[in-house]
Length: 491
Image: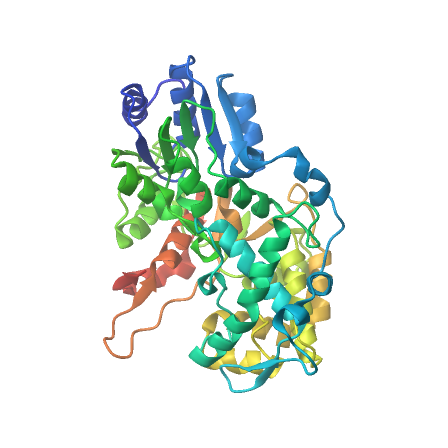
């Protein structure tokens, strides 16, 4: 695009006025092009473009002008002194527990402690499981803007949600998480360092970024730790760009920095609403979800792009709500003799299958989705009574067995070779395909028993919006037809 749209021109003008700025940019609406226009409009100033991931940062280094440095948050924080620690051999949770000596930290002598699960069965809390939960806790702390680890950083685990179970969990995990963080802060740590750890250490040092302008991309999914650093750069002009409707990673610590910028800087909010990815038919489908969540913009489809909505027998990509749903589509495709690729690879699916196999064999697992259960029967019961999201996994494991699922994951091909690409909606973010079908594991919410209202969690609506906006030419969103019955959204 050579000539800016009126919305892009307005954004460049706002930059020229020296204002901090929030730019809400809908799916396919040229936000990267707009940031480049801003960078090229004033080559005298030093600019820092903060990218969502390394590949986006690499693309930006090739296409942005020389006055703009492009890095990820981790790239800003990296120090070569961490290099050797980052290259250590992989460390399992069991090895980490031994290295840190979990039993000594907790004063455990003799029998392994246990917690009574939500279903009333004792769950053995081995040092390996405690360590895995402690490392998860450290990760959540590293994503936060907090200065110290507390119990609120401990993730919630299915099967261990009731008050007593949670209290007992916190007593075991919090001391180990605190000890783990103290260890990680030292150059001679016994635990392995990762990128989130040094980013947090950098943030806690209250750094000043040597730049005149900060351009934050994908701001809606920025972890609080990075948002706090950027908001503290009071010497710089700050511009946050993203789409609040695409905020889909709050479950792993990301929050909407666009809203933080608006609250804390009191800056103006502009929009980019002209999509160049798809035509009016797909834009209309996207706007259903934008209206539902009361987003600050509505998309305008590109008139030059032909797009349609309807049933698709042979899509280029199938987008699923869950890993288990994605694996089900993979197995169907392989059984039909098609070459199938899974975005992100089969590692997550294999880990789930192996965790299920452990529980089936009477062995504990430290997998975060299943570590709160004492047995596979407990998973079945919990899925049926408490949590519909596990039903797909239970059905898949019970029908095919872990070995067949692992074999299927090993039978995947590359995306370049694939006849069908399968992805979770989360992993599809930032991607697009000509023809997309939404899978039926996007489940309709059930009516509230007291009020009769059909209430959809806001993040689920945002995830559906992300999914439908991955299509360029053809969209089959039949599986989302239930949206017409939704009466409210919840936080």
